[in-house]
Amino acid sequence: MTNNNNSSIGVTLLAPNTILQSRYRIVSHLGRGGMGAVYEAIDLRLGHTVALKQALTCDEKLWKQFEHEARMMAALDHPVLPRVSDYFTEDNRAFFVMQFVDGSDLSEIIAQQPGPLPRNAVVAWADQVLDALIYLHSHDRQIIHRDIKPHNLRVTNGGRILLLDFGLAKSKGANHEENESDRSVFGYSPRYAPLEQIQDLGTTPQSDIYALGATLYHLLTGVKPPDALTRATAFITSQPNPLKPAHEINSAVGVELSEILSRAMQQNPNARYGSAREFREALRRIGRVTEPVSELAAAFAAFESTDFEDITVLAAPRVSKTSRRGAHAIAAFVILLVAFGVFCRYYPWKLPTTQETMPATVATSVMEETSGSINKAGWKNRKPGAENSDERLPRRR
Image (tube, rainbow, N blue to C red; front, side, top):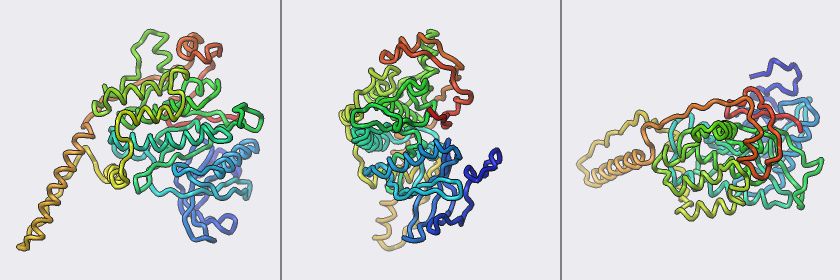
């Protein structure tokens, strides 16, 4: 879809079969975010599939941020993070090339199959993401992702998870002090962003911890978490907390895991886990967090192919006179019954939903009560349209 509101070529999407740099041939458009679009492409020189990201802006300052994102990702080496291999500009457009990840992002899976995901698989994915956050937060130039949400977590066909889209990421030097070159684009996804990020009061590793906690809450309950401003408004108006404990929505979550999520989602950054490592250790204490690749792949395949509102049980094949075939048929039927029982255990048929409204402004006193480390900051008006949980609100700062 072409952006008709801007005639500049820099913000138009590419058509299939477009060739860039005499090397990359566009296959299809995979998706777009606040400032970028991603394509599947073929590297004609090496003959393999790559992902190509385009900056949907003609602003040179934002181009610099886009180049900063490419350079930052190219320096990373972690199995949960995609690799970046090239950056270039062509025809008033900026691009970078990165590893193609075959699979679906978690927002697509949730949309296709509403309801909670399997507890063990979600905790195993969380362990992998937290390992990546430990790597990012302890990097020579500390990196804060600042946009963790289901849309930016992609599950591979093998059942592994990758953390994508560093468009809002912020990096700091070894002394963790910001300078002009470290400035990042302001933006957030309301349902998953912490209060300090929404109010543009500065982000820390605890901001990523909140976002991951909110993401896990959504995956484990099937219910989008209320945004931080809605929770703050409820607090100052003496209304019930709109963030219901996860185990009250889905009993399979359990009280211990529910309490871990609640701590990760505390409004006050100082009340959250002190580090991604501490968060990961808390999850590991409640039980097994590693799943065999086959189990994770099976969980992913189930969400790809099964409609839990209308489960179809396949009939067993006819048994021939050969006893060996009969034994195989009986085994297959038993496996189907066991799989059906597992699905019934992990996927409740119906879940309650929540309806929240997004306030336009919030009083200063909320920050004094809920965010001890930033209690001197003033409140700002919210950006219109922030009620869309998947929409980021970017601007240069």
